[in-house]
Length: 182
Image (cartoon, rainbow, N blue to C red; front, side, top):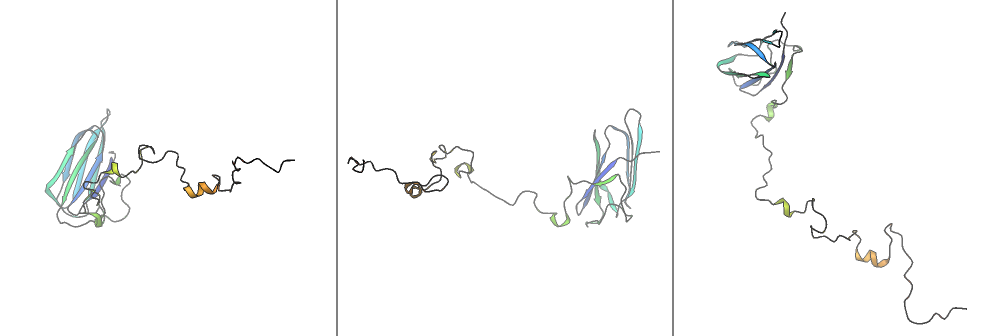
């Protein structure tokens, strides 16, 4: 009895990405038919455990334009669709997909996002961020006053404490003697 490796998939309008996760796969056999029949078999591990995938894809494919790559950890198959259209699912059979079949979120792009540039829409051109004082420098290097506690000069003259409470006015420093002493 064969086991099923994890199969991940994603699509574009014109192609389907199928990735079979099977480290150290040996005796790999891949077969793709124009009607959409996809077959994979291989052995893995020191006990040469057999693995197999036999699925019917949603629609017809172009076998001559499809490509496979067998790596050390997985097998990648780029399947060219016969018609450039979005498939509603990977398998021809409706219903719940098999447990070994998963969406490849690393390659997935929504239908309405396809064709948009993958790069951000921001073009900063020749903008020099080092001159924008956006942080990363201490106050003195940025040209600020290191003793500035963001109080205005008017607030400091009135004599408010850092908590905002008013202080008593400072004592007079005139040179006249105090005449109210007893």
